[in-house]
Length: 186
Image: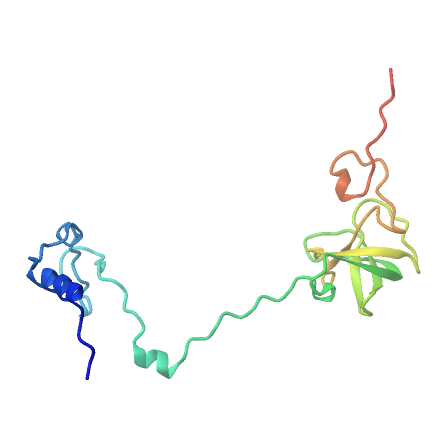
């Protein structure tokens, strides 16, 4: 046998039933937009050269999704994969050489083949004018490719470990490991 409702509950139910239903202001002030037609747009043959449709583009049907399921976006490949979620890595220099850049440019880019602390060998670009890197030098490697040197995806950090800063550098000194020049006291 179901439990009998209490007297206060019955009184509140009677009050709800006897109350008249009033329209809410949200429904009365709602803007009624025209529904888009499901029929394809019919072109009228008039003198206009172009006839544009104002109907909304058709969405994918359930059968189309079932036939060819939607594929997720491919993950972007990392610019510097050997660093494995690290900003810098220590390395030992194996060989220092020069490299010719890609087609429109002509120069001799200074590069170094280094062995990272995780055992991988990579080619790094040496930024700035002049360097003191030689074989067996301990250097610090950061990510970032050299755009006109194919296969170079890393940079050496100037002014860290055995690699010195660029001498007589005035602008962007922090990128090249150069201290502030001392001004002559007058």
